[in-house]
Image 1 (cartoon, rainbow over the protein chains, first blue to last red):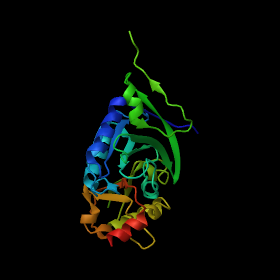
Image 2: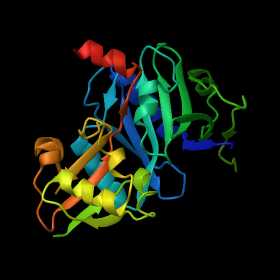
Image 3: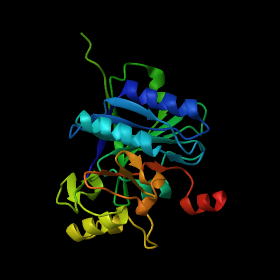
Image 4: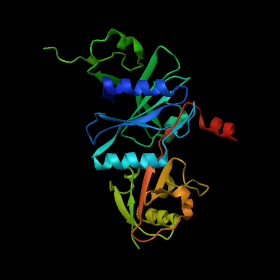
Length: 166
Length: 103
C-alpha cells in the first residue's frame, strides 16, 4: 500500500529548526491533527526526558497532558518526530520496538550533516516499517529549500504543491 | 468497585474498539488481571514475562504515573481513573547496547 505524509512547509521547517537547536541531543515532538484527517496541523515540541544524543523519551506526565489536550480537541498524533544526530534518518530497532501509535507518521530527521538535513517519514505497524513519500504543502518557490532537505523515497519523485499564483 | 480505564488506540483491538472500559481490582495488578478476564490477551501487552510493567507503556492512576505509586502494587479505589498510554521513545542506539552502556 502506498503511503503519503502531507505536511505544511512551515511545520516541517519548525521541526528541522527544533532538531538543529537541540543537536547533538535528539529532539522529539508531535504534530497533532483532527482525528481521521491525516493532516498534521498543530506542532508540539516535547522535551526529551533522556537528554541524550542517542535516545529520546517523552516525559510521561508531559505526554499525558499533551494526549489529554489532543483528546479534548478531537485530535490525534498525526506525526511523531525525532532526530538522529549521527546516524541516518531511518527508524532504529529501538524506534521500531517502541512505535505504539499505529496510525501516526514517524518522521525522522537527521542532523548528522551540518549543512543538509535529512527528512524521511515512515509508517511503523506491528514491527513493519514502510517508507512514505513526503508532500510539502505551501513550500513557496525557494530554490534553497530543495537543497536543504534530502528525501529517500519510494518512488523517488518529490511532490511540491505550490500556492496558487493570482 | 468500579474503575474507569482509558484504552490507547493500539490496544483497542482487544476491547472491540472501546476507548473506555470498566474494571475492578484493589491494586493495579488485580485490575490488569480483571481486564484480561474481560479482554483476553490485553495483559500480555502490558506485563512482561517477568511480571513487571512493560517499559513501553505508561500507566496513570488519577493522572499520576504509577511508577511513583508503587507500580503494579499501586492501590486502587472505586471511582479511580486509570489511563494507559504507549510510551513514546526510541533513538538511534539499539536497546541492548544502550542498557549495557547505562550499566
